[in-house]
Length: 87
Image (tube, rainbow, N blue to C red; front, top):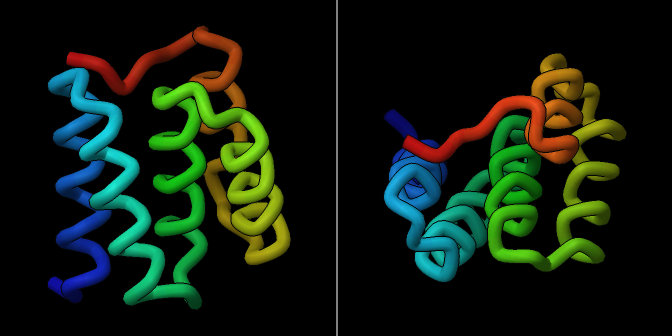
């Protein structure tokens, strides 16, 4: 597993545990290491969403869209609170 994906996975775990500050920290680290991966942009957008950082969320969502992330419908549902990442 790439280090960038390990950090991004840790961000998802932190979201599940309700530790949004650490989720952002981990997702940002993953993004720093893997800026060519749209899944990392999407995970960072989700971390920002749960942390309430809406401008950052929207910026990273747009980045994921430009990079042709293939599960934007799932991200949209998270943003509309139709589904959750929380445990």
